[in-house]
Amino acid sequence: MDDSVRQHKYVLSEDQMPTTWYNVIADLPSPPPPPLHPGRLDPVGPDDLLPLFPMDLIMQEVTTDRYVEIPGGVLDVYRQWRPSPLFRAHRLEKLLGTPARIYYKYEGVSPAGSHKPNTAVPQAYYNKKDGTKKLTTETGAGQWGTALAFACALYDLECEVWQVGASYDAKPYRRMMIETFGGTVHRSPSNLTAVGRMLAEDPRNWSGSLGIAISEAVEVAAMDPSARYALGSVLNHVLLHQTVIGEEALLQLQMAGDTPTHIVGCTGGGSNFAGLSFPFLREKLAGRINPQITAVEPASCPSLTRGVYAYDFGDTAGMTPLLKMHTLGHDFVPDPIHAGGLRYHGMAPLISHVYELGLMDAVAIPQTECFSAALKFARTEGIVPAPEPTHALAQAIRLANQAKETGEETVILTALCGHGHFDLAAYSEYLAGSMVDEDVTADRFEVAMAGIPQIG
Image (cartoon, rainbow, N blue to C red; front, side):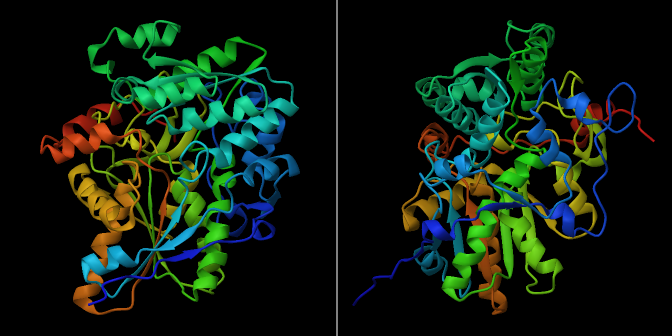
């Protein structure tokens, strides 16, 4: 009996690669609330952001243009791994016994092994153009730090990375990869910054958080006129750069002759999810398709499903502008789960706004269910996923099983935003049966939310 399954891989040619980034703000029924100056409490202007970002990125942050041209120099670097492939997960479908069709856009083919170079490269490009000598940043799982170190090496920029303590301890090979690309890595909280020394005095902060690491990186950039700060998620220009993912996926699904009924993406800060979903949201708003768009977050850091929509700081120390977003409070330090890239206290303001408009859904899933999904995927599709996209895979499997029960036509698209080659310690823990799901009580959220600024 022949049990073989034909693998479908949809690959675009280089001349089909997007030459513009898509800005969803142009098509939304209302604009998102602006960032506020933390002192004046009025909308921030370009001058307020110049100490941290070059003017090109500031203008992308505030633009209402529907499309932004990708510079030729950035396209030249993108061609090293873009367009990325789209796969039909036939073997996973067969394992599940589902009539659903599951597609995944694989971003693990980039030099950093994730989607993060899609924004790291243009951020380094614009900073080099503006005369910046050094970029500082934070990193959770290490994927963003790796991507920025790679991009800085291309443009001869110094790169200094503050890695969340729990991830720094658990993922030494990710740190080594950052250093291989020329970056310098510090465990956060560190004794190298005033805010790091202050926050390290509280033992509850020892495992670190993205909010703490952001504070440290911002402090260093603000004090050095030759340095600027780079962020791997959350801000509008970062989400903008990631839309190459969804734009390519639209063309690839046309090649497959299919239309998604469900779009599923993991969400921490939101860049991967936005990159996949926003071009499809454009098509949905235009009435051409009607997929259910779902953000999937970890149950231990559920900013969309259990947070509040309010103005809050993007960092722990309160050094950034105030952002209107779904937040658990800038003081919240999540449990040190393996999906380090999803341990951020807030959600991207633009995604939060889209969620408030009712244009997408959200669900939170515990990490043991996610790793169960990861094993099913790895053993059928042959790719070991990073802990972050396992959340989207878990939701995709839920939907596929639902389709088996209802018989409804179901076409699922997700973004496999990175491989898990440096996350095998997490798989070892799951396989040994020692992985646990943290029960985050309402009391813990309430303590952190009490510190959210009261902005009318």
